[in-house]
Length: 157
Image 1 (tube, helix red, strand yellow):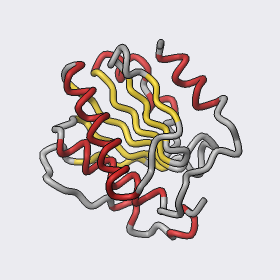
Image 2 (cartoon, helix red, strand yellow; image 1 turned 90 degrees about the horizontal axis):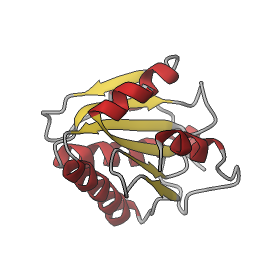
Image 3 (cartoon, one colour; image 1 turned 90 degrees about the vertical axis):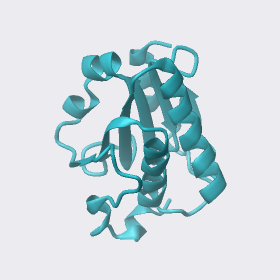
């Protein structure tokens, strides 16, 4: 599936789509980051989309250095979120080509991209008004500062 179709998937999502439990979106995003760190994803960024887009509350974006790593990261994120929170993605795109894998958890969207796709499509530029936090890829576990002042009631479905 081409990347523009992945963007269309987000834009055309059912407006009534909801996750199955009340886990705050910030907790889901943190779990995704931990999964990315486990599989050595690079250039990790968390974007707070709440004020700039109705697409999701948070984007978690990272780069994989090969299609094997992109697949491993996507699978780790899916497994970790399922094991820790009982959530499955509402929609998945890109597992065939492994250039840009999108895991859509409704209010958290995880983008695992090859460097060329990430540079070309520039999600950080596209939604440049969104607050963004870069995560140290060398960390074993991380604390996301933008979630410190987060009122968890804003994350409830």
